[in-house]
Image 1: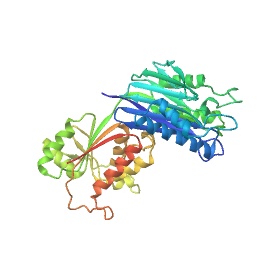
Image 2 (image 1 turned 90 degrees about the vertical axis):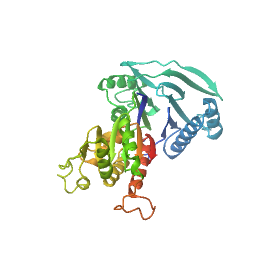
Image 3 (image 1 turned 180 degrees about the vertical axis):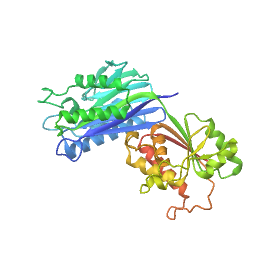
Image 4 (image 1 turned 45 degrees about the vertical axis):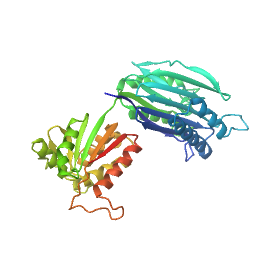
Length: 390
């Protein structure tokens, strides 16, 4: 199985500001993860613009293969410097992870990355060097399954100044908090939420600075394969079912006709769970979604259009799986399956259902419309999505 880094983040705006002066950019590509955090000078609109530009420039250049030196030179040439305090436009930290294991960290004027391995705070080997008059810290290290990391803006270091911590929470205390939390064996979203809630409490609910944390957890990748719709040529029925059943990870079928086709090709009985988990709530949208079916060797079998529509809607509202309701209906189960997976392969059959109207505006089958909406939401969640049409 492939190793990946699960990433989640949360920002607290400085009290009284509508925009956060910190900005996060996370991009995923096959075998490359890029995480950028920038803290703009000051707060409010100006800081937000500076931090956003910094992250966008750094992330896009690194994705194109630019060196760290080229990125810093571009930032220095592009963005302004405070003429009064002679301070940089924005601080930043960039973490790139290749193949889920090889990590390259660059930090400029930002709190050091916190890393916990085997319940211990790890001191990363770092090299300081000067690039275009800016001193940066650079580190190369290997990740292993079970590692946790936290990337912070200054707002975390300063939390609680004059209160519980006279000089602020401080990097060391935050690191100790992360180390203690690791015993829960939670995920990156739970780590981020726990740190954000603690930070807000230390500020007594009114943050004195923008505060951002990016939580990361190294684990095995989770894969899912979804078969939606029968192929355009019935001669390919056996092929598409074989592709689904031979795939690694979670397997799902979306569509009643597709499920019957798979059952026929596998020589198995398709069992419908008529007591739909959502039927008790007549006023809920879940009661409108047809019941789930069972097919040996397949983890989830659902109806097509209504399930896809419900899943897309829930993916749009949720930032993580923890934001979804309990999996009582097909739409929620599908949304949870998709959010739990890191790599999703969609096998989309192009057969036309004569009983199904096309979208009058876009002229596409409704199944395709909803599949595209699901894909859009999955990419927003930084999932690696591949699509195969047959």
